[in-house]
Length: 188
Image (tube, rainbow, N blue to C red):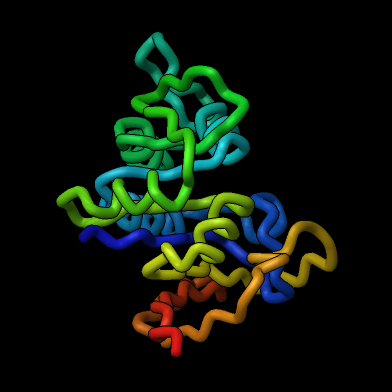
């Protein structure tokens, strides 16, 4: 069974808005590229899918826009070509190498996890909360930014039950950010 990994940038005070932390730099983009390469497929909710597609879907011209720096292109290429699944009850269709996921969330994600491969990757805020509540996330990865945002959506706000985690890896960045990876401990 392939694991489901949840990854997100988060400030020290728990804000997970995509603009609250440090701007991406070459080191963090290399890191996120490597993390995406570990996944057979990406799992997005509608909001995250639309946000990521607007930024990282390669234009029909086949040329990246001028705002994408050379050091961002490996990430852009990786996310653009990745297989994607989009959980949405409001979208009628998706593109960008994606399939729409409808119906029972637990059953659909469990079926994706049963397929052979290295793993699934989920980002965003709302969908990961639902997946955490269902006990379907096998690894949590937080890139903790040395920033106090003081506002914005907070990480896993509204989680129904406490989830105990054990540290399995950490990586420090020159910027002062720290990536920490955890796995849930068995519920007793």
